[in-house]
Image 1 (cartoon, rainbow, N blue to C red):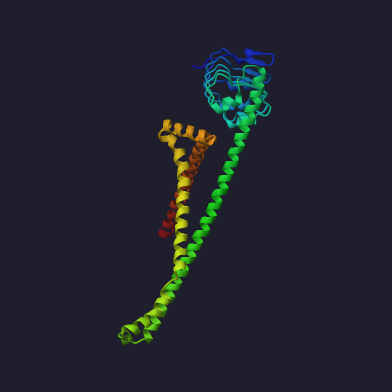
Image 2: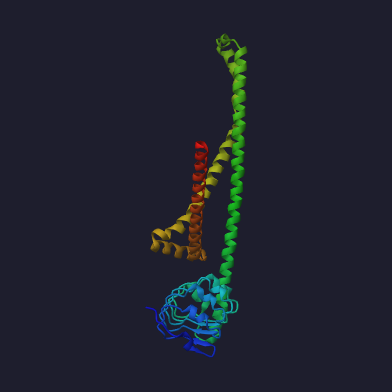
Length: 326
């Protein structure tokens, strides 16, 4: 049960001290009314999460969240660009949002006694004194900003690659369509020529000796046959086209399997993500989370489009029915 306190009574000078108040939720609305407070102390409470609305406290430059039960901090924490001092000592935080890299004014950060990933922990350092906490702020901000930039570059690279592959596939498909049309036209002309020649060649011309029959059929073979090199070229192009399609299907299916794996087997998914992260040195866990969000967004948008299309079709046929009966 949330503890009710008089927030205004906790203000002393520019510091709003809400520590040791057994808080389970942050009273954002009450804090926002106190414009004078620039330092907010929420340490030694029972907080398990921080609401995203904390970014509305634009006057806060020092935020103490130490000795709580936080497992994460808001994804939009980067909007508190005025923040200079952030204390997260002794929580249950394992990962940091990329938006933290946008806090260019952050001068002091304490992350010790948190179950951080090995990569983040090595960047953060020990944070055992003021100098190390200042270095932690600089290093973490620079590290997360660099990770975010790498992710954006990788996303753009994949988009460009997908666009290039799509263009190549379009070209191959167009060539195949042209070949089929050309072949169809040639077959049609060949049938017409057979019909014309059949009108002028007597039926008894086929009843000749083997030598004359061979001579009559030899031109036909030369007209209908195809060069061996052209046959090989067609086979090679079809094999290449099949290989490209298979590679595209594999490249599309593999990320989808990684994205959807967490929905069916969280433990196995975590093991796969940890292994891929250790092998590639990339934030695979973030890629997975970003991909899941994008897939959910695409599915929701697709359902909305289908519903709209269904409504349009129903309305169209209703209009047709009304016009028919009137």
